[in-house]
Image (cartoon, rainbow over all chains, first blue to last red; front, side):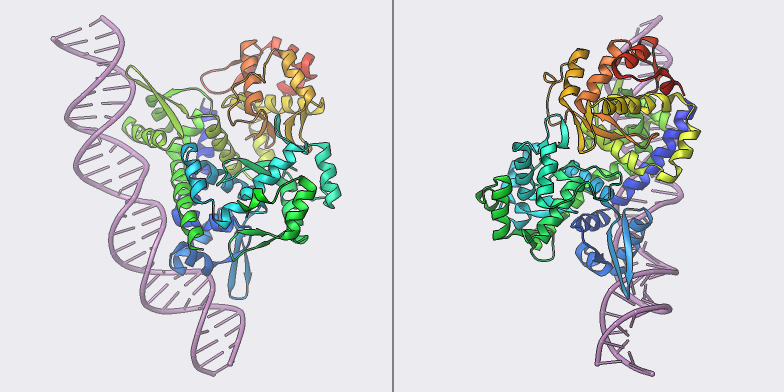
Length: 242
Length: 242
DNA sequence: GGATCGTTTCGGCGCACGCCGAACTTTGCC
DNA sequence: GGCAAAGTTCGGCGTGCGCCGAAACGATCC
């Protein structure tokens, strides 16, 4: 009992310290902005969050010290990004959990249906929005991704990636799983994350399937992308343009 | 840009409100205690966290209002439990992420190697500790659980559960996946969670494979349990008693 | 060298909130 | 009905922390 107590206490201390980093709205705004997967400067984040540069500087130092963000100094700039995919995943999970309850999901979806962000965007290092959902659904429908008994690529799925020219076996395999679900903000449904999700997103950029719009995380699918998605996954262009 | 801004702002507000609930060490202690899956009274949680009943009452009201806990009034008692499996999973994820870095994992494991908690425990509604890891490893080794390409039960795995007398198809299937990984505190490795993990844990209790020790979440594996684990999964009793 | 810009450090302000004890309500027991 | 126990409400205390502006620092450009 006593042993369990102290152990729990240490865990509670660490848990509260971690969540305290995100418990401030300014810091939360910064972390959510960084979920686009790119590195922002301190000034950009300060303006985005609507606080003075000095305030932002202190917040960012806390986030770096807490391990949520990584920094890189270049000249007089301080570039900040999410520390690693696991951290991005955690923030995504929290954001999805904190999202509006299921009842208001439809109204939210309807309200934001016309925005570019809901149509296609990146979610740290993989594809999200209706594009991400459409791809995940297509992979599942074609038997490339098993969702009934968990969330894993099938052997056919591995071959599909190989045909795409993406070498998943050779990918740097840390503790990050090959495939894992990531709950989508706008769609309230899981889309493909993990190493394969990141690889697919990277391929989509490299092969010119999609490009970034503006400075945020919104994406546009190119004509080539539409053709490839139809040819390789049977995704009709209509499903993405609505 | 503006649309994205306000949207992000709302998300940040909700994200910070959610994490603020766990950002206090007293509330974090309470939530971690409730991860044993049972319902505690307000007084028990107050004593466990080391605060006055009045203080605990206010904290618990916040956690209920925030949706993390569910309450049930019975006479002059107020029973509290984690709201649902998704919430438990989130708290587990956070606790695992907030846990000690990989470098200190071995020393932690060594230090707590002798405690009953590290040997076998529940993690909300499924089995954890070395018992949970041993089961997950055995399922994987026998081809019942696929971890190479994600995390999902195989067809053989479904048959194994059926032979056990556990009907996974008939389980109340909400959005909760059949199988999902849950990162273990002490072992720093994933163990089986999700509907199948909960069903296996329930079966283990019902069939007398294990029983609770004390009032915490620690478990003891019975002789029958040891025999069944060896017969059904090839788990040697030594692996659990070390 | 001088001007400018991005960033950081430092005081100081003010609010938010976690804590307790005391008083009160409700429930259960004798 | 009377008493004990669980829980809640309220007032008040103290502190922690998020905010800003001013000033200092360092890099870049002219």
